[in-house]
Image 1 (cartoon, rainbow, N blue to C red):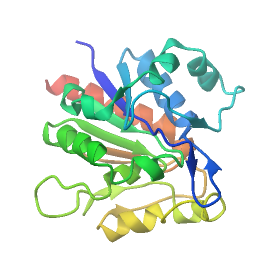
Image 2 (image 1 turned 135 degrees about the vertical axis):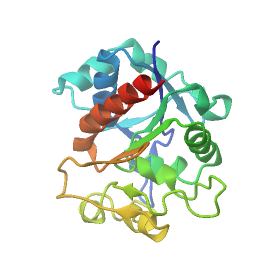
Image 3 (image 1 turned 180 degrees about the horizontal axis):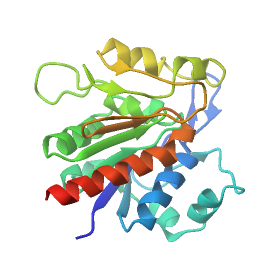
Image 4 (image 1 turned 180 degrees about the vertical axis):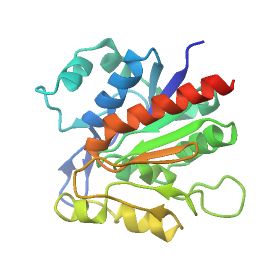
Length: 227
């Protein structure tokens, strides 16, 4: 039986006091999509507002990015449903890609939080990469503590942000995750790192997007065997 993954994508085209151009970081959809699609996983897209999703850092020299940009899937991405119209329990996993856009409209968004709660409480996989783990902040699954408390997590690090977008983001994501009790870890700037903690899978930065896709695929295969 075909498994399904829901990508939850930003609609935010700008961020910060200088209106820096942003959106989702192109590789952070293209690389996991490449891994999952070639393994026969069905992928759907949704966003807080539905429809058009701006992107950043497209590299046509990267075969996976170029292939995704020219695909029907990219067209579907820009016609995705509003997240409020989607039930995350209908999917085997959700994935929240990064870019700076999520720090505008994904973080602490009630529909995004509801999607995470629905996925988690129905025993699905939850994954996010780079700035995408901002989606986990403020999530309450009803046990009286932050969702990230005690969980092993990575995300775009404070060291990486220092030279990238410190003046554009509203807060340091690493600090915010730690403040809610996350067991946070990172590696050297721009090097791949993926952390798997049960059904929660997080990646540090754009270089981690492909490896995260592979870890998510492995987790989907394990879930299929259990079923």
